[in-house]
Length: 214
Image 1: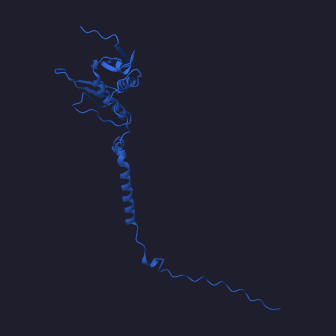
Image 2 (image 1 turned 30 degrees about the vertical axis):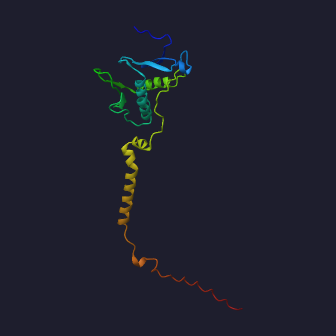
Image 3 (image 1 turned 30 degrees about the horizontal axis):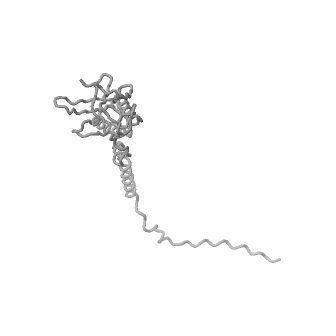
């Protein structure tokens, strides 16, 4: 029977809908001791009324790699999936604020698991992952995707199609209206062209009356 090492510590991160527990050891070769976590041995994610998730370091990194950029895109108004079909963890947007977390089991005979999270549960999951990342006791050097600004194409796609088409369609309609009005206007008369108008001599002023001499 294997007993846990007396140096093994457990870090607990609680939110309203979930709890993340990380078990690990200090890396003595790096001069760590006490509550430092330099070696991750096991982690579990507990949900209220949901199956408990557990795994090793690579599973935790896979969870972070899809959940954090997905949440950042959702906040920016861009709904897109993260993680391909063969990835250990995948998250896709659903309808009415539902986010489906797909977990692929690597053990033969174990079915995959789908968890439907609402906005509040997704926010709690992001909080516990961020608390783990920024905990000064954790020295795991987790592989986290860089926080880059959204691409211009993604920012354009978040604008509804009707709003994107409103400006060009309105411009074309205004141009067509101006062209129609120009066709309806009568052409100018040749006789009234400014080049054919003769100047009119000014009228002579009336002569002043002659004065009689005394």
